[in-house]
Image (cartoon, rainbow, N blue to C red; front, side, top):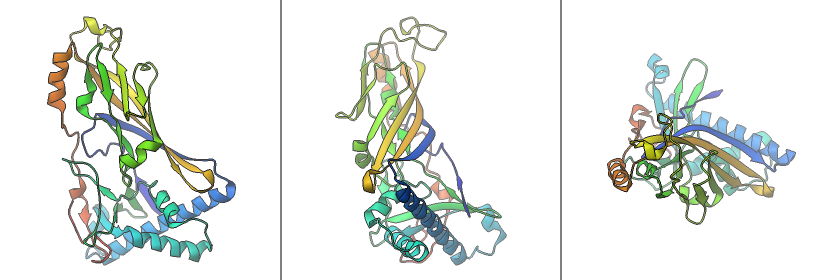
Length: 310
């Protein structure tokens, strides 16, 4: 049986948003279709465990007591993994109604593996092997009873330099989503953003892919219960942001994810002070990619990352 290590603070690039929760649900699903979703989910977990156990057995550390005390990662060709899932499904449950694309979309809703890597100085990139095939990467560790997969959940990202503003400013914030499988450009048409109560002046505009609004001069700050005009600034205002994304499946069913995060809006005295702070924060990295702490182990040269370091 596998378990999951939840690390909600795993962030790999410039973002002012601190992730809080990720809730997922299925909507408009008939009972017979719900059964097939459960079956495919069970098949995914079994195939993921097979990949990890194969990696463990092929490692020279397989019999070492230190194996349980370390964390590892391995890669497996995505097309091969999908083939394994279909074969296991047919052997365990018989016929199925889903296509390759349907199962691929379902795979994209799971965060216990990832097909995209993160370059600290750039944007997420697809993982691929030497032949150009997309690779699933699993990060895991063992304890006495379980395989524990490390999750890479979908979360909201907001550029630091966009969080500095001043009263009367025309504020534009372009939030995004980091997803372990899907580029944000593909998620964007199916994603909406909203803010906590009290920030109606900052609205999501789908056609501009941005949160836009004019910062009210009457906005009350949290610093010493003073208004912006009375305070020296910049001072923080914490805002809850929610991103809702829908993924469509057969028979008008859909999978919905709701990512919640909090970011801090910094209120400056004027445009000059705001510009100074924005320049300082531009390109800032909140935390480092710790993938090198996860020791690479290979399955075989054809289907694995072959010990590639990120």
